[in-house]
Length: 436
Ligand code: UGA
Image 1 (cartoon, rainbow, N blue to C red):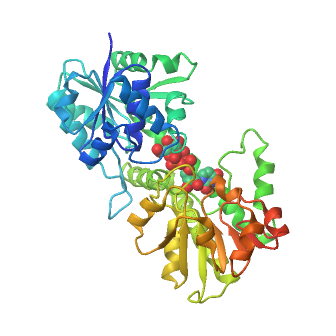
Image 2: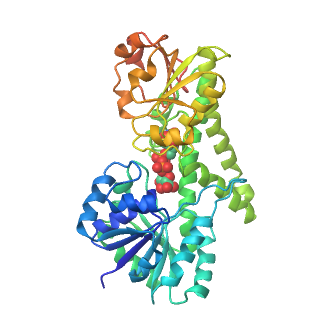
Image 3: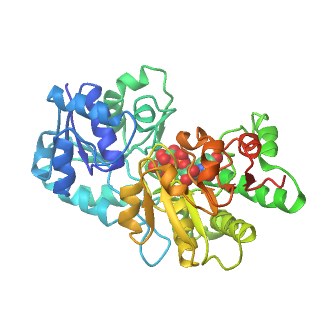
């Protein structure tokens, strides 16, 4: 059987999934309610920046296998429907907003053919899949529902989709697993571990993974605080503990902490759901993980004040980086922009540079000043703050920047710049978690 796939929700996750599944040879129909997004994708243009995905999308559009539409009835031909819509944090609490997931399933329900499988990929509170499956049993009894969490990282979206480190499927029966095995057959053939779970476990795997990653980052940032107090160096500490394979050296990069559309909201939604389930105490530690993370943003502002003055009104601060991580134009809950906005609110003149994120940043923070070039950004600055570790910032020549600024002070909020290189060029260099 040649399966036809639909992808509901064509944002980061959905657009990536649609293009990648098309590249495996499937006919894929992408549906989204946003006509502008659909128009762009239909032209083979990506509405966001993701390395490699632009080329893949353009290539797949040419094959004729991949199409995008706002018309939900177009999914009627599909056998498998991947739900890839967002689950943002609700406005007035910690929980996840399930409006879009529920709306997506309701919108495709009338078009589900006999034997169709709806596959949730969105990150949802545990129990959501079971309740959607029960609803579907009423609205579309001819269909079934499974959950298949996605672990892709922005910046590596294509690689993580086509060569993931595992595939996790939450299913209620063998048939659903067989269909998913058919979809992922080329990926399974690479030797990718396949984990069959029940629906709640599959949902939990995702939030547990993101909680663990968030914990690792906050752990090292807590160590950075202690290093600062005790006169130590967190980068050396991280390297040293990372050699223990039980600990591992990844995700131990101390700095201004995690942001983005996933880690912060996922740990909060997990806490909210645990409380509903009567397991609040089990996840109490995540509250501290969140607090350490937000404190890292404050700590960098404290360093700026100690370098310049309590009163920042006379100072120009050049910010390198706006996105929540490099190789992405995503500025959702970006620590860099949060810090920029706080410094501006404190009276400083703040100019922000980013290789890809200026337009999205301007939409969220229109009152900040932006600069298209690093040299313009740092001109006459009293201090440079490095907040997103883009490669181009590591490659900057501090001896070239020196004559442009007012004060040669740089604060590395990501522990990614070459300290010796900056110091040798006459800069006062400060990094989070390093006292020297
Ligand atoms: C994260 C997870 O890593 C993915 O596995 C998951 O699929 C995704 O969320 C999701 O739920 O959709 P992503 O948000 O792309 O992926 O970003 P990460 O690479 O996890 O980085 C998150 C934040 O942590 C960034 O702000 C990054 O700068 C920060 N970080 C990361 C650190 O501060 N230190 C580190 O050592 C690593």
